[in-house]
Image 1 (cartoon, rainbow, N blue to C red):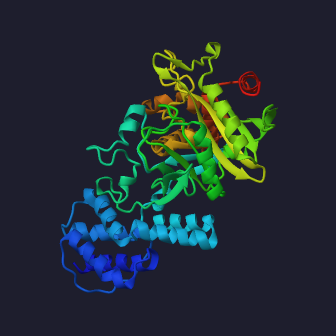
Image 2 (cartoon, rainbow, N blue to C red):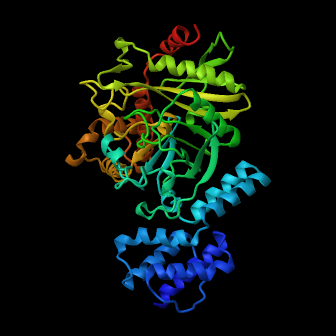
Length: 484
């Protein structure tokens, strides 16, 4: 048991060093850990050694050898131990506000994010193992940390909580909730549109300091006039972050449609850098509406005035939600419900507010049962999951299975062999990769070709999501329905 006691003491001392544990409270929290495990303690002196993941792995090894819990319960016990060692939500929030008052909001979120990594809520050690690269103007990541949801209904079910408490996976009641291993979750209260919301980081974030702003009230996701004001409230307080809302519809929105929330963080995504193909002047406000050089259908409203941004964005939203063009496959509503929606996302720049409005449709057809404006079937081997807010902005999250499957494709190229039957779905993709290789069979060429192919496919998927395939049609929509 000595090794176990050392691992516990190492974690307690780590909490003193990284998690704000006061010496006065050290015995108290150590006893909480011992009580959790049902053991007594033999005093030792063990210094922190390595990262938190390494120390928790050591703790699990010794605790399971001692028969204190089964290895399949390791995540639950690690979460419980780290929850005991972490500051309480109010203590950490007070620290956040103190840093913000003294050093500004950028310093405050840096502190908060670092804390969430240090207390192991943000699984940075796992996230750092995800392959990530740029290709064809997009950011491509392979997500090895979470399962692939090829069925939208299963994806939504995966975020449900049985028993009715908490009502969903992002309700504030999850803070410290052991039923979903959320004992280390910490949140900070913020106010958007005069309402109480909270900010938290994603344990498996897709980009730097990826977090969500969540309404305290459990109400369905929606985008309306007030949404634009709330997004700008967030950008005013955290001008170094972007913030946006998923479309509030299945297949084109987030997996937690039952609870109003936004996503944002500290990374400049490819969409934010997109340039304008042309500019439409709003007659009422004089604001510039840019039609972006982007494979999806996106317009950008630019102004230093919140009122102007809200007015123009609201008119675009209302015009699109009720827009029909059957010849283009666009039908705003039918017996299956509403199909048109927008995903707004805002950044602050030296030009003022830049509100990017992504026009989306989730309509289906006999030819495209997964969505007319979704990734087409030939690309499903690479990406079949919903194309949400983050991917619509140019950061693609591809399933973890691709790492091994694409590795096999690379081996086939290098060895000059045909695709095995189990990878038959890759026939189209494999053919394009071979063309990119130009007859070369070395691994460096093959790996570069695979990355180029992934970028090309993801760009074409964004083209699939475009409701207007020609920018001239986007301009016509603005002139006919928004700035007339």
